[in-house]
Image (cartoon, rainbow, N blue to C red; front, side, top):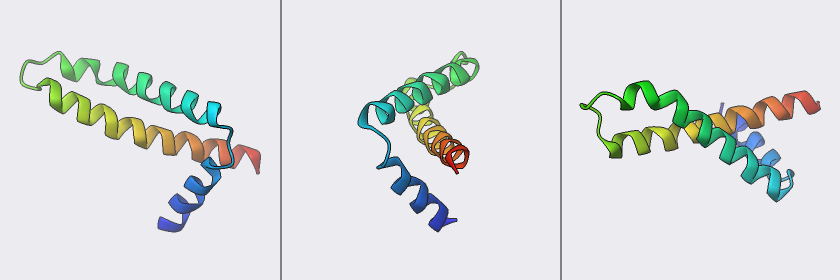
Length: 73
């Protein structure tokens, strides 16, 4: 598992800088809309939603890199 993650992150270095940032932006925007139903509850505060959005965004970024990497093989 760690080798796959390392391989994926090494692959991200091969992508152009603009594509890396565009992919990160899309992932973070998508996770923001995925979290909207949960943020509507007053129990969950703003700090939790930011941390959850950050973690989900990183996970989505790595997942999208894996998809791009597998499509290019």
